[in-house]
Picture 1 (cartoon, rainbow, N blue to C red):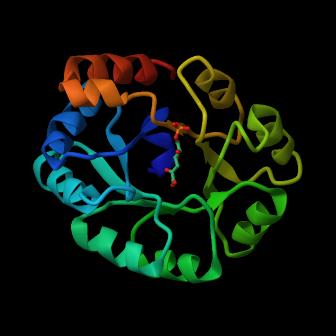
Picture 2 (picture 1 turned 90 degrees about the vertical axis):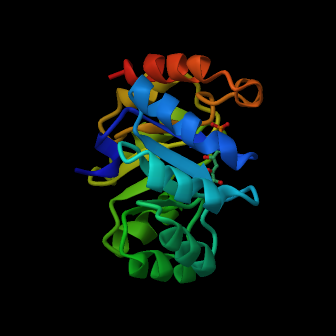
Length: 203
Ligand SMILES: O=C(O)C(=O)C[C@H](O)[C@H](O)COP(=O)(O)O
């Protein structure tokens, strides 16, 4: 099954304290969102991926903010099951293809989407979704590029997710709204599970 079809929302998480990784992942899975993108923006991100991969087998944990071939290698070694990048470069794409796990390369314009499609890639992240034109932009891309499916991410919230999910070329959306910084800092996993459950009910 495609990464885009497992759940309506991929939570994008920024983990500062590796001790929070496992309870956080368990809360998201319990709420109904098993696909989890851990961004490589913090020093402990790879540790967090490894802990979730080892201790929460029901989760499908991946690495986000993958920008270099070294990020690809480190993420795969940590146990990531997929990779997400904010944009695409030829070097990064070569590395992601060699990584051997599913990946969602980032694109924001029709030319970028076409360049990925030329390589045979038809599932990608649309980033930064809201700032780059949002739902109307994606709908327009669907005319000339109907075979390409997206995970729009960037600025999307519970209230705006349904308009994206209603598009034929959107499989799921991504976002950070499921794991508010204050809830994580307070260890309020019940709140995170509730936010996940609301999002899981979108489809
Ligand atoms: O750099 C990456 O690869 C990312 O993962 C970027 C994130 O997808 C966005 O930052 C989502 O953040 P929100 O707009 O708060 O939902």
